[in-house]
Length: 220
Image 1 (cartoon, one colour):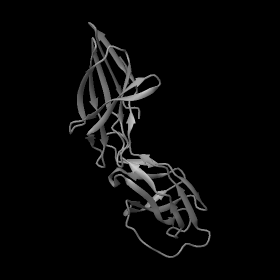
Image 2 (image 1 turned 180 degrees about the vertical axis):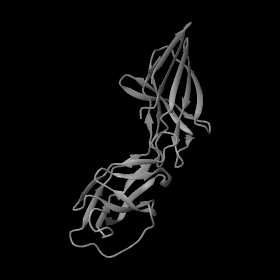
Image 3 (image 1 turned 90 degrees about the horizontal axis):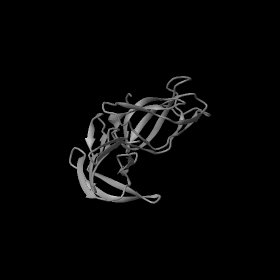
């Protein structure tokens, strides 16, 4: 989103962020009953109230689908989770971390038949709240930046981040203008001055638990 308002030598612009059951054990898998599940690192949804996300997978198997135990940071959080050729449903409540799909069982053939194999370890992070944004107001050479940086937690609640970066484009490269410490609600106002008309954006850096991103540029 990009909005540009001008009145009496005042310019304002803003832009938004671009962006089971119990675990059981059973008999050994029959010869040929194998599955390899490829999963890429992913971020959960950035919408308030969200509870699930379908994570794509690449399922290589003599089965069209399997059940799996979901393990997050070494702890089983759910068993008998359906994994099909297009993916599986990850619950927001399971939170972020290093995830594996293990203890596979057959879904399309004799239900409950153990299937050898599993997934690669992959990282799940919280998604940045898509309402995160930067708003820039210019009066003469004075600049005022209004920042909002949040993420969606395991309850589906918007939570403020404590750090963000204002970047300015110089030539073809984005440079750090200011690393900003944010309030507990993820907001902050920062003021500076510049005579030149430049592009600005808000950068949220990726951490172990939150997937970062940046806004579209604002030119003032």
